[in-house]
Amino acid sequence: MRFNKYNNSYNIICKKLKDLRESKNVSQEQLSNQLTLLGITLYQSDIYKIEHNQRTVRDFELWGICSVLEIKAEDLFEPNIK
Image (cartoon, rainbow, N blue to C red; front, side):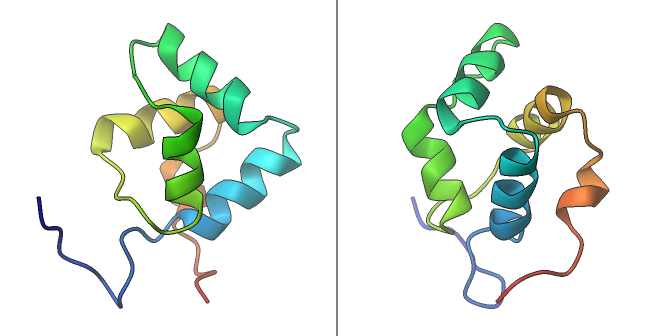
């Protein structure tokens, strides 16, 4: 499957996701496990790929990530792309 990119990026939340996740002391594995409890299958390797701009993010995955980290989606969209 081929995906469109925005400014050569697969997603625009990569840096902010990693920063917010780490600031809450949540590992990629812990985030993956909590998402599983919500019925969202997102492996640790998928989270790594999202954070390293190698994978797109589906809307339900974004919802789950925000629910687990107790943040608003807007928090992930603040300009912080390099």
